[in-house]
Each structure stands twice: as C-alpha cells, then as structure tokens.
Length: 173
Image (tube, rainbow, N blue to C red):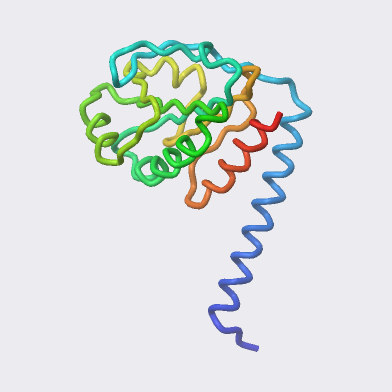
C-alpha cells in the first residue's frame, strides 16, 4: 500500500513531537530531583556603559540569553525575548542579553535594528560564557527568584511558547 507523502510527513512530525515531549518531561523531572545548581554570579558592562551584577536581581526571575550578531537563530529569537520582557518586566522578570563577541559594534547595531529594550551585557573575554558552560548560540538560562538555575535551552524555532511557560511557572513560585 502506498501512503501519500503528507500522511507520512504528518506521522513523522507527530512522532518527533511526542519523542521531544517525553524527553523534555523526563529531563524536567530529573532536574527537580537532582541537586540544585546556583547561578554563578557575574558582573558585566552593559551597552549603556554601566556595570550590572547578576546578584543585584535576586528576588526576580532572571532570563540570561547568550547570543552573537553572527548567529541567525539569535536574530530570530531576540524579538520574542523582547516581547516576553516587555510583557512581564513589571511583574518581576529581568532579562539580560549577554553578547559573546569581542567587537561590540556589530552587537550594538543588531540591538538597534531589532529594537531590543532589555539590558545587553558584553562578555568579550568569554569568562561568563565559560561559567555557564555555553557551547551553542543562542543559549538561554532561566534562574528562579532564589538564584538557582532551573532551565537551560538552546533555541529552536517554536521554543518561545516554552519560554513563556517557564517564566510563568517561575514567577508563580
């Protein structure tokens, strides 16, 4: 029997989504049962010139997004992060964009072009990225109000809904 390509494609997509959800649920369960990892503190210079320190935001839910201007998925993700920040910043959400490039001018241009309003910091020597074991761009870390890392994501298209769920969950705690 020959199946139409659309049916085969739909079945493969459903299998992928099911497998991803099972894996994600297992990972979330494991992270709750494992030892809590405290988010390493850091101080970085912001685009506006001031130094910002992670520990200054204790009590807020903090999203740390590591990115670079040469990264296509970063460019795709940043408007969604900006919307998330604008929607929840008055309820205790802090979003910190951490650019990992040596040259800040390209990053500044991208921030201007995308109209990003959340604080952007510069990790030009890569030390903070090493603290957080960032290997892929973009990487997004979700930190609870007590300063503990709760979720880590490497962006994939469509992850924005999951980001919203994480933020709502952490803000409700």
